[in-house]
Image (tube, rainbow, N blue to C red; front, side, top):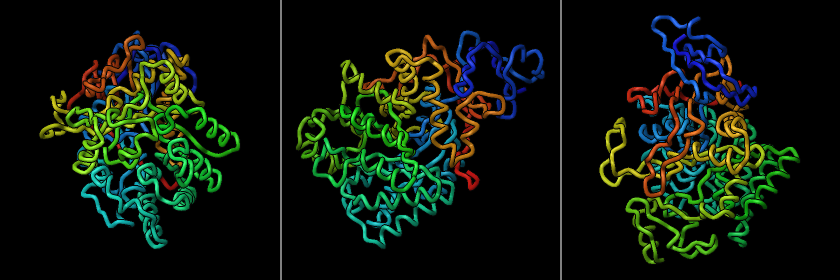
Length: 495
């Protein structure tokens, strides 16, 4: 064996195992789980690690991470994440994204959905972003040309681009529909039909709820469940907490009825009251802030920490830097009623934890991507660093779930969302003999988030070790600087 983790509390959310055991790892897999494995199986070059008093479980799978840099992914690893996937925004072409990630190396496993937004920019507006990551999308966010209704020929070209990405192993289709609220619902149905025929899930940032925009073309929540029912596609509702806010009960009731009727609709949530996106987003136009009970003072321009304050300043920033990140105060995390809204999103049956982790942005020149610790001057949303630790505290405290149930929402549940299309996910999200050796070891009494809106790059506490494909990425609470064992996660024709 290469490594034996000795004497930890082993929790497997799939089998229900919760007992003190040793975990032996060899060739990137969990080889054995039992007692006395170190003495029996370690060669002279092997490593025995005492993890007594700590929890040993499957690494966390983040279905919604916009982080594509090594430093940001290390922050996620320090939060227990072993697989970080870009599924809501997606990328296009996906083949280029996989090649770039492989060439640069990644500390955690990685994968991509096809990007409806980027494909639409190309097919409808002739916009070809310089890169194929979320930064490229954000840079063109405020351009109305890509948001206009498409001709039949343009829609056909858009679907052809998505089909090509699905054929190249895209994990699904990511749809940022909330950023183009004027797109006709018929286009979304055609896209869902394409995904259904490919056996691919659709990851949607929904358009506005009727409560926010009564004159919109369709209620965002109803659109998702309608597409699932009419096409048979697996529809995944991204960050249901932030797009529903205080209307969460109505939305989850609708989703629950669709599930009971046999539709495949899954949900995700993160445990923060404030969101973050590009300041050029359609729903942040000054004349539309009131729909969500917001004012310019609800917005903080992240590059400078400036409270926006006035409509004039908001218009100025939207024109000058539409992709500039802005923190949006939607719910008050210190208010018991708003905290209950977040909990209902997280504890909804079958819901999974996903971070919506944002790219690292630098106030000055970005450092070398391998630099660690992160130098001053970087900022992101605290969810990039603390989502999973924070969710575990909430779910096992206020949410009253067992630790095993809470862990399932971080690992087994996310793996299950993709397992039908992506065979690789059937060996992740669980800790059993033969599973991938993506493992997190943490102190259940100490695990907690430490990042804040003012100090967004502070890593979570209580994470002792993280292994990705059997290699330590975090050892004794610190990043292993030369460890880049992340592997691509791609769809397969036998999925």
